[in-house]
Length: 338
Image (tube, rainbow, N blue to C red; front, side, top):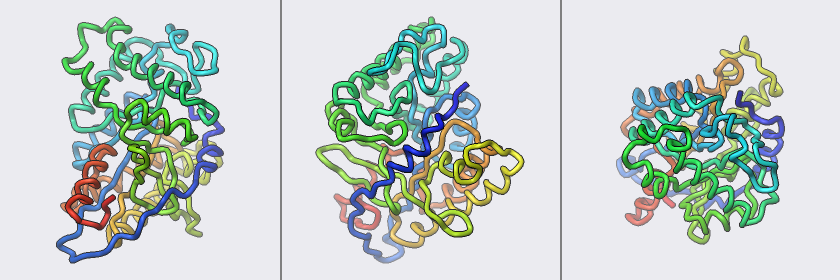
């Protein structure tokens, strides 16, 4: 069973550095304002029930999501020894492995369907290890393992006859973004991402919703700190951090409605501040785990269903946002552009 490691919150909290914020956007005439971008992403992307749940939400709300996939979810437990992370014994993974081939087959089907529906599949490496001390070469090794596992996933699981046409091209050319486990992003990671050909990284944290920053050909997005709770204390816009704040990491499904309402209010306030203000892209991160009675998924789903159908809102993937923001910069439409 997939569980988030207890050290995740501490690492996420320590990652809350301020990226370059960029100059505030200049408000133009209302008719000239760009769409408000909302980027919802999922780390791990393992639970097949949540694949279906999120894909159904996307269809209902005209929303597209980014799934940061962990590749050990495509390796059955019986073949765990096939995976070895840098500096770690073979067969180890902080998030476990798939139960069996049937589970992998269903997950692969969900991945492909999500891709064809317009969602983005990005990389979260494989075993969810903290790479803060990894070298560039070690990061590259983990990237190569991810690519190999994904490219051979159908064949290695005895499903070669079910591999969809275009899978190889998708793996080779369609995985363009990355988020580090624990948001742990040393300089060696960025060097490796550039060498591997990633377009963007989504491992940073910013004080407010902010434009991504391009450095050396790699664009870096940051999850914002948003105000939450009666005192409006800031917190990373990610479900696990809310889980820690609300219940100290102990599951309390009976309080799910209360926590869902708090989280929705925090998400909605952060959204409206940008929608009615500078229209900086707003990013929200979740995991494929339902904590506190699915409170954080419920809050996200409520917001997405409410705002994504608006004609002046675009709920898009990171890759789409990157293209949209670059287009705005080139056309001189400054609000919310890079």
